[in-house]
Amino acid sequence: GTQAQRLLAHQIQQPTPILQERQDAPPELVKICERMMAKLPDDRCQSAVEVSHMLSTWTKSYRTAIGMPGPIRPDQLT
Image 1 (cartoon, rainbow, N blue to C red):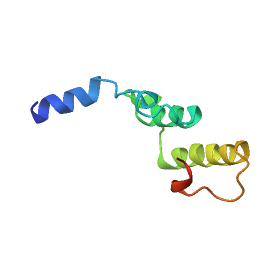
Image 2 (cartoon, rainbow, N blue to C red):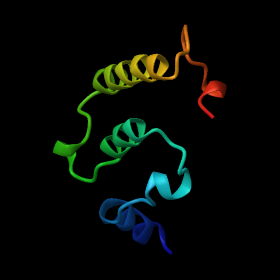
Image 3 (spheres, helix red, strand yellow):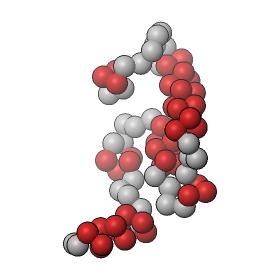
Image 4 (cartoon, rainbow, N blue to C red):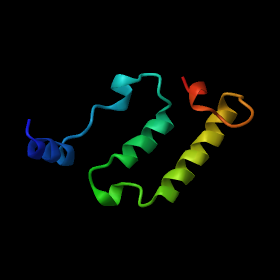
């Protein structure tokens, strides 16, 4: 479609659910991503600091849950 049609779709259409594309995605991480993509501003994270805090908290709990010491590198998430 046109650029205007794509912009409108971005504003009103929900993206493809993450779990539809990646069934192995950790549910709590999916919730964080969905919150960052929320259509209504009040439903989204209000700052990068908030996103950083949510991801840091999730990373620590995920690392503990899988018994992985130390920080998680992106290549270790798959």
